[in-house]
Amino acid sequence: MPGYLSVNDDRTLTPAGKAVVAKDFVPRGELAGIQVPARAGTRTGLWLPPVYRSDAAALIRIRGQIAAALYAGVDFEIACIGDSKTKGTLTQVGKQPDRSWPGVIRRALGGVEGFITAAPASEDDRWALTNMERGTDTNLDGVATIDAGAASGLSFAYAEAHTGGAFWVYSAAGGTVTVTVDGGAAQPFTVPAGGGFTAITPTVTGTAAHTYVLSTTASVRVRGFRPAFATPRLKITNLGRPTAAASHWAAGNPIGLWESFRTIVPTPGAIFCQLGTNAASSGGIPTVFTQIAAVTDNAVVVAPGGIGTTPDTQYGGMYLAVWNQADMYGIPLIDFATVIGNHDQADARGLMADIVHENAVGHAWEAAAVLATIGL
Image (cartoon, rainbow, N blue to C red):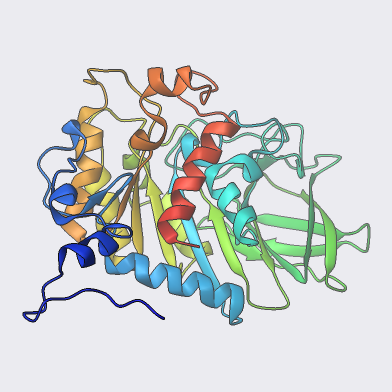
């Protein structure tokens, strides 16, 4: 005989009914007793560690869109912006895109990269160029520089089956970039002088893995490669820029971090933002979230973990600032400090590669928190 939930005539639960419900639900009094971390200040939103505002509508939409991309043939892209702690610095030589927390999420969900930032082979061994560098101006997002007449050029081998794609390049003086695909005929492209990043799209044959080689007549910055696919896909794009502070993501530079992101990924379905490690105070965080709010209402704040000690005076202003954005815009926040702890705690757990950066295991812990938050 099936059981029935015990309810009084006034529609309140009987003691037996309360016992049944208690197996699956947290009592209201217990929920009210959960306190946000002390350095987050006074908060009124729902806090179910490690997520603040887990009831935000943005999470419902993001979950639905991810499911649609996986099971209903809909294209959906999550752009992750941040610094070296987003990029995956020191996770594994040559494999940072896969070992970073955005990379672990992508692999766990069976997604692809919507954009692949050019990087030295020590970070991403799909790229090869002896003079690859980021430059000293963190506000600019030219990652690789191909010098005019470089004998070998810049090569990029992408093993995921794709139908081609675009390299995004910039040249102050203008010039010609020549691309060969899989050792085929040279394809020349004119790059205009100045302005922002320009897409050059070589012709490819077939849906398969392809290898590209770029050479140039003038010094050219290469932002990276945006692959094209035969069918809609779930895309997780890692746009983390090592050494970047939040202020470096402020709009206002035609080849800056924000402008290049907005040009290359014009309509991200969602934005995950992890910034603040490289600035002890708010350091431009409110400006960045004002920009994000103008692009999408599907935003998630990520508060970095593995930094500072207890008591934490160095990062207190930054930490408070990112929580403030969650309240200001009513968006969810995932607190990696609650996941892995501060530096000393994370280091004792074997999750740190150095004094600032998580190792691959630390990134895996953080990715697990994100996956649990999006509920897939």
